Image 1 (spheres, rainbow, N blue to C red):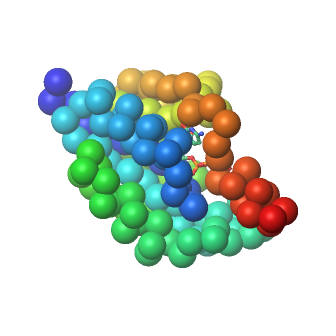
Image 2 (cartoon, helix red, strand yellow):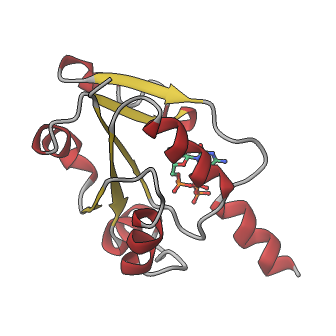
Image 3 (tube, rainbow, N blue to C red):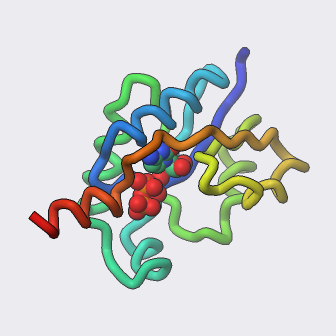
Length: 131
Ligand code: CTP
């Protein structure tokens, strides 16, 4: 089981769905590496910045007992480079990404986990806005 696992995400307004996916990813190997998307990457993708700043999002993810290494994901186009740089054996993501990373199956195993139902950063923001 000496496998290196990598996953990616924004992890904004950190919630139990994030804990669950990180726990599931960690269960696949002995080292879990997490790419936390930078504020700039999120702005380019969604035309808005995350609620929590990148350093805080990174610190929260890093504080989880089952996370071993963290780094900023600066570009969506660099996934292959990150997988190779961190020598990941497995890429694991929530199944909202199902199929989207199959192109990397030539360099690592690609695993999708079911999302935790009924919770997301977007939903939390909407609920807070409506109160
Ligand atoms: N994730 C999950 N279950 C949830 C929410 C997220 O398993 N209920 C997983 C995603 O599939 C992804 C990782 O957590 O692998 C990081 O997702 P992220 O996009 O940061 O969280 P979301 O809550 O989905 O954020 P948003 O609503 O902004 O898309």
